[in-house]
Figure (spheres, rainbow over the protein chains, first blue to last red):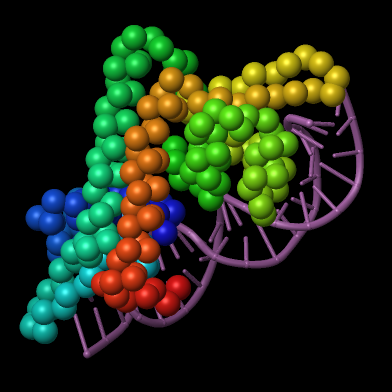
Length: 101
Length: 101
DNA sequence: CAGGATCCGCGTGGATACTG
DNA sequence: CAGTATCCACGCGGATCCTG
């Protein structure tokens, strides 16, 4: 469910609940195409991680939120963030080889 | 770095440090091919998450361990595990739609 | 605005055979 | 045992065009 090039990135952005609109996500995630954004959102929705709310107006407005279960991922994403930050510290200490990739 | 079909699965298995050998991983991860196992391990190694130790003997023996930074991922993986467990609870309460996928 | 539809290249990953 | 080497299919993801 978390696989895919953009899933985690999208989830990270949806986290605080402040970013919800399709167009916002598009701006916040450089390099993603409309197709991919829509597709990954559909999959997240199908997996019960994200809910979609359509406002029937012109022009249309759609909001995406984390479901109850999606929000339960919060601690996990937080831990990943912390892990990423630790990398800097370890690099500073020269604790591991700089990857060539 | 965590992308790829097998990365997280491999990391989960390496976690307690009890499973280390190539052949063990092969048995523990049904469906993975030799190519993929080797490739993903190489990438994890290149990214500094896993260390490889070759014992120069016949037949050869290779052990994989998490590096210091790889071990720092532990809380994150734990949180993901907890998250997965919560799914059962939510399903039992009928709290979200069963995904069709 | 929020996408659907279509076309396409390229890389991922599977299967098989082989090796130090 | 712990991998390489090779071939190949498929589907991911990008680009572009179109629409309610």
